[in-house]
Length: 283
Image (cartoon, rainbow, N blue to C red; front, side):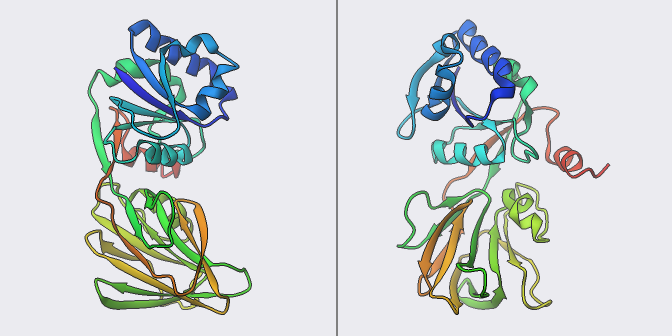
């Protein structure tokens, strides 16, 4: 088995579990590709445990049977960008807080290779693709795309056109367009609906709308959404899974479903209803 391992460098509380996990890979004869950020962090702490690591990479072409994300939901998002469109299933191991995307507990990490030889399901998570000549870098969002005002003193108007038909002019502090995966992230904090991860939809949720009639809206993920901003200031802020850039008001942002999905491993005993019940204290 070959694993691709990505993780946050803030793992001081979980070093024993990580070391046991890496040693189990070596004993089994498995190998690993590891992101350089995590590798350089562990190299000074447990160099002998890194015998299983055959390659250290930031980006580029690599292959693996599974990817392992060590951290919280933010680490899972970065892991999905690292894996990109390679179709490698990701196992999220939670060392963060809420961890909606990370289904496995850190204490289960040393047994992960054996768990992956048993039964599991693959859950497909859709992404949003941002189409704009001004967007540089990774143009895909697993959680959400947001358009917000660039200054705190003004509001922003986001004109939305859905499949070439005018939809609404959102006068608010901003607009969130969330995937089903991202429905439990920023979208949830502004009162948007929670959506099961496999639903073929996207969610539009205004941020502090200046009209009570502006409500969250669920649309089919087969739709194309075109957005243009107007504001008293000459620029607006575009954020793709938390990575923000500032653009001129005449920049049009086109959103559509990405041509590939993120594949997540769901092990027995870990499912979305249980995650909601436990993380949101639903009883």
